[in-house]
Image (cartoon, rainbow, N blue to C red; front, side, top):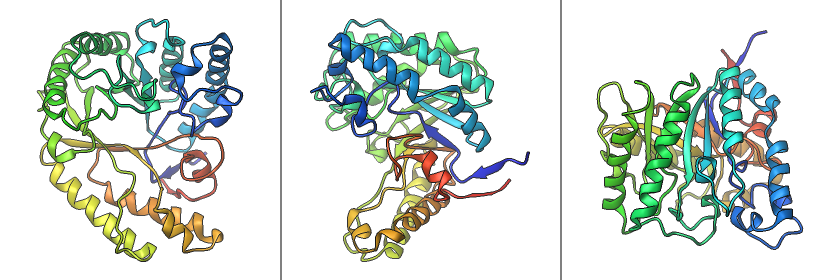
Length: 336
């Protein structure tokens, strides 16, 4: 069977091992909680988490990714998948299973440490909403290094392991120097363990020009900076064409400059557009707008070594559900 090639080369498997209420609201139905931590505090909540993990991703999903020419998956990994925590339901078995599925279906995996002890930002995607105690805490930082090393030891020989991301979306305001120093330290530790050719990825904290050059690659141990560019606000852009034009060239210019310091990974992107642009057009044109936005970004990201859409799946169709966008032809395919 002739395979098809899609403009997006990778996806995130978010909402699986770290709950995000906006991605999977039905999981939270009947519970007055906002995050994974809250759900984990009761026996009923833990059962709900287990059921969600079993149903949200199955082997058929990995088969679908392979058959639709997706090459990379970015797997958000919580620290409770590596070390035991009474506050959360262990996710160790699920990560091991996902790596086996990736090996079976010839996918490359970026293991993204998405939630660290103490919390690196105050979002629910770090496990506990509002918690941000990692900074300045030597105990949490030592634990984070140990977790990264354990991940590396556990999966260093897996042919699916493409890279390890030190930390997802840390709060960088007031923390730039601390994070840059930690990135260097983590990279030094990881390259004592990982196979040559395995990438170490560091996030730009949404301040890419302050983090560019944080870590310089050593021979055989490549480094890349992860950028999450969801959208830009151009109040002067009165219509979609003008917005796409400005947005494309801003991305191209910024990527070109940042690439001088290191390789780039677009670890998260989507077809999201400013609401006012949707409001200016009838609903019948919205999917076409998403299609144009996706095509623009794929052209703009050609300087990146890979791109990973957020997210592979979500409840309901739309801009956060890569699979539905592919099946609807919004993210278009071309002959391979």
